[in-house]
Image (tube, rainbow, N blue to C red):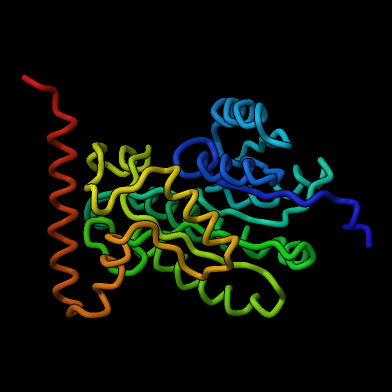
Length: 274
């Protein structure tokens, strides 16, 4: 078959900073040839140079805005032109917005759905034949938010619920074909995510918080072991299980209070000191 001339590659989206950059490092350390995909070319080039010092392969850099509907096709064309065929897809790109859904800019919330849901779905399904051929897999990054509704971050929580549900179902469907499919559900991680979302950017609570490197390592280990769901940290495992045991109304009230408090702390943190 003609496709056999292509080299297998691990595609990692949102790979310029944070969890995405950490995932790139851990996959590269373990011998994977990787393609970094994000909007910020400068950051990805610096990361690729850093990784190349000790890795077997220097990462490929693909600059793309995944909020654009044509981005997956452009990524596919770029990889094809380099003789590469995705064997593993790591869908990490995503963002959140804090505040009441009726008050946040509607266009920004729809852009969140484009990135967190549409692009992830497209990239998960686009190269299935190659993934099956290489016995590769798909690692989708969701969140503990995917296990519950989230007043004051309604669209973000809903988008991660989609990622969780979609990935678990896909894992079931592709398992007979020898394909690993894993959803990584971290709790709070100190990255640029908090700043963009309008949240307190200080260090998260010790029982819930993990570093980007810790999350990436847990995600890689779980993916390689064929786990369907990976939740880094005992505290986050407990939090993700609470909606199964508590009344739905109570869960909504607790999360509403939690998100309001995060918003107030963020406002206080951003105000200049007198």
